[in-house]
Length: 282
Image 1: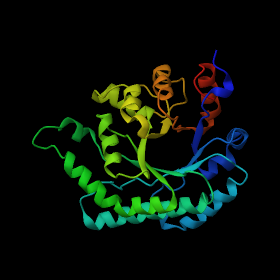
Image 2: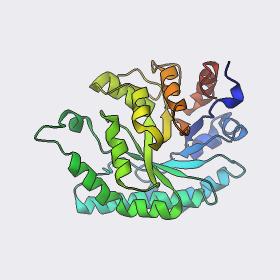
Image 3: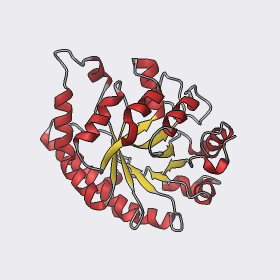
Image 4: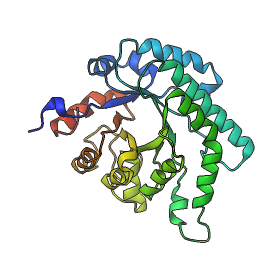
C-alpha cells in the first residue's frame, strides 16, 4: 500500500479573491504548503491596471507560505504566434508585464513559473503535411513573439511552460520548447485539454502526452473531463484514466508540479481526497 506521505502534493490554481473568500481554501493551501498558481493576471483589463499592486497584494497574501508560486499568463486575444508586428508588440508588452508582476509577488521564491498557451490548433493538426502545413511558420513566429519574453524570464529565474490547448500531436509542443535551447522554457500538460483532444479530435490519450513530454514536463494542470469539452471538473467526476496518467508521471525523472485547475476551486479539497483515496496524490 502506498504511504500517504510518499504521494505527490497537489497545488491549486486560484485568484486572490478565492484565497480570501472561499471557506477553508487558505487552510488547504497553507497546511501542506501547496504550490499555487495565481490567475489574477488573466483578465483582459488586469495588466491595464497596476500589475505591481497585484504582485504586492499576492506577496502579502502568501506571507508564511513555503510552497512554490506561479501564475497563468494572460491569453485572451493574445496569439503567441501572431504574424502582425503591431499586435506582436502588444502581446510582448502583456507577457512582460505579467512576468514583472510575478517577480514582484514571488521575490525570493524558488522556481516561479508562468503558463503560456500553445500555438497549435486543431486546424493546424488537420492540415499537417498538406499544402497548408504551417509548422515552420508557427515556430518562427512564436520565436519572434517570445524572444524578449524568454530573455526576461531567464533574468528573473522564471520558467515559461507551454500548455496544450487544441494540440493533437503532443510532440510538437515539446519540440517547440526545446527549440528555445534554454532551461527557462519547458512544457505544461492540461489533462482535460488532452482528454478533449483525444476524444474529440483523435489525439493520443492523456498518458501519451505525459510520455511525449518526458523530462521537459515541468507543470500539469490537473482537471477532470469527459473527452468532449474542456470541463475543468472536480477530480473523479469525469472519465480520465487517472491511474494510467499517474503511472506515466511516476516514470518521469522528476515529478512536475501538479496544479488543480478547476472551474470551481471549492472542489480542490475533495479532488485531493479522491486522488489520495486512489493512492495517487494528496
